[in-house]
Structures are given as C-alpha cells and as structure tokens.
Image (cartoon, rainbow, N blue to C red; front, side):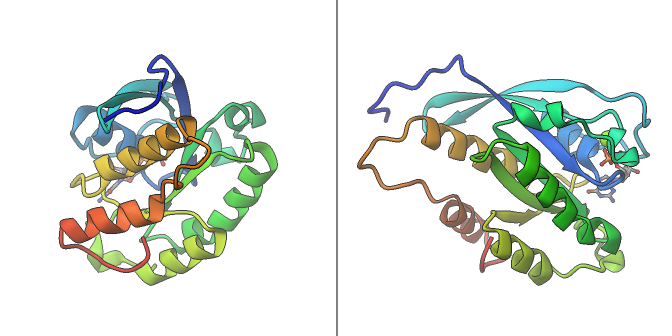
Length: 206
Ligand code: GDP
Ligand code: MG
C-alpha cells in the first residue's frame, strides 16, 4: 500500500565494484538473464549497463546497473563511475583472500568518491565452491558490521541470494526516496535477516 507519492520514473544508478574475477559480470548476468555462463568474461568487453525494474511493495523501482569493462583489473575505475551512483554492490570471492583483503581499499575509495548516502551492499560470492572457501561467512559479517553495511553471501552460478541482494538494494532506495519525516526508518539489516530466516538459511547478522 502506497501512502505517499513515489516517482516511478526515477532511475537509480547502481554499480558493480570489486576485484577482477570475483564474479561481478556473472552476478549481473545471473540476475538479468537467470543463467550462468561459465568462463571469464573478456576484460575489454563489458556489458555496459542493464536496466531492471524491481517491484517493491507494489511500487516500481528502476535500477540502471553498471558493470565495469574490466578496468578494475588495472585499478583504473574512474571516479566518474562512482560519482552519480546511488547504490553499489561490492563483491569479493570467498575463495580468494586477496579479493577479501582488498574490500577495505575499495571501501576507502568508495567513501572518497561516491556520494555520502550511497547504498552499499557487501557480497561474498561463489558460495557454491565450498571446498575452496578461504573466507568464512563470519569474517564477511564482521567486516560488514565494522563498516555498517549489509552483507550476504551469493552464488552467481546457482543464483543463491542474487535476487534478494538486488531486491534489498531496491527496497532501501525506495524507502529512502519516499521517507516521511516521522516514519520509522527502513532497516535493511533487519529486512535481510528476516528474509534469510524465512528461507531457513544462515541466521545472524546479515
Ligand atoms: P568479474 O571480473 O568480477 O566480472 O568476474 P566474472 O563474472 O568475469 O567471473 C570470473 C570467473 O569466476 C569466471 O570464470 C566465472 O565463471 C567465475 N564465477 C563467477 N561467479 C561465480 C560463482 O558464483 N561460482 C563459481 N563457481 N564461479 C563463478
Ligand atoms: Mg567483469
């Protein structure tokens, strides 16, 4: 039920951030097309952006999701990429310690160049590769808590939590845009935790 006007024409620029190889392009392809295309995506052929419409509490939220064309390989993601982003998905690979360690550097860059109120979602990707995991879920949770950002583990291969990650971002964006002065704030952490509980998966801080 909508009790306030929300402009459905608003386009929310959302960007994919994280080390090369963590699965940014794969995650976006899984979200957009519902499939996993194995193998590395070319460093030079990015998919540019994908427009998605997410329905949140009967309201449409438009996301324009940008993927890098591999610039992150050379640490040359331009500041313009961050500048007008309203949301970002920051990924590491649970089988790669360096990609996890670099999250702090990415967050420093984000805090420097992105808008102050940018919506951030930290994702530990490739949970299907359980045998090769080197970063425990608790380590991701701890880091997320330290920075006050929501966290989930995903698999671009199986699709686990992929929809939920984008839905949570869309919800946060919509609730922020439609915030009424005396309305309780939307709690993205609580929302994710309750969704995870409903699916009987992974309690705790999410
Ligand atoms: P990007 O550089 O961050 O865009 O990463 P890519 O999407 O190109 O993925 C890098 C490699 O990891 C590719 O070989 C993908 O097939 C693989 N990959 C990405 N996500 C997953 C995942 O969730 N599970 C598994 N098993 N492989 C993945
Ligand atoms: Mg890519």
